[in-house]
Length: 107
Image (tube, rainbow, N blue to C red; front, side):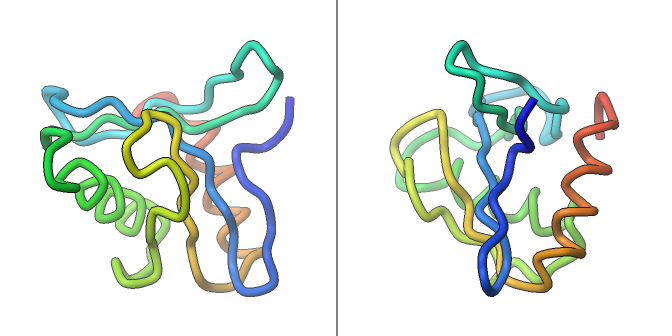
């Protein structure tokens, strides 16, 4: 199983499958798609209108990874359920944080 992220020079690209309009904001672990790529499953209470769900996802991931909200941005998939988040910071530390999130079933 591949990790749900890719190391970059100044951080990581994190692959996420987002479910908006959920009961709670939370991360539900890692899921592997049919093509073999892995992604974190995330849920947010926000609706997918005017970027509200994307903003909620950025805040959720920033809190979970212990980085400022300004360090997390949607790099691809703004209107799709499958998104790529760019997380700025120390790639090795961020990778450890994502792996820890991956092992937890619910946050």
